[in-house]
Image 1 (spheres, rainbow, N blue to C red):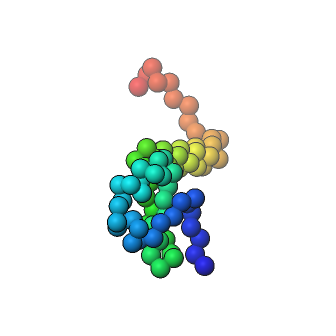
Image 2 (tube, rainbow, N blue to C red):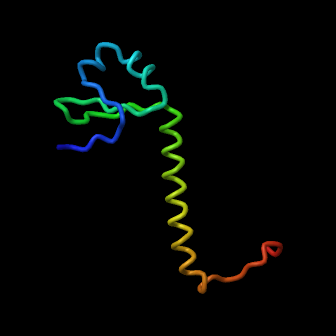
Image 3 (cartoon, rainbow, N blue to C red):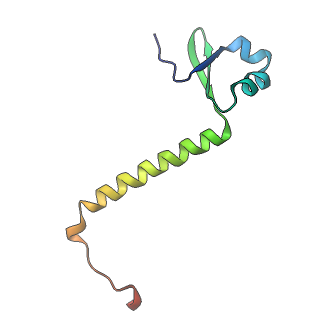
Length: 83
């Protein structure tokens, strides 16, 4: 059985009948749209999608910082006033 990563789910047929109503009823919550009881796609509110992208960006930047901190002993001190 495939994992569904949403609290709400609807069948593809249900979704096709009235996608606007499905989205309205879900509010900000993600919806898994199922085809033959497997997730075909997820429907997300734009604000939630943007928040997820921001979080992923933060995680990526944190990883970069951690990698660079490992190299701190190789860093060269620079006086920004002299540049």
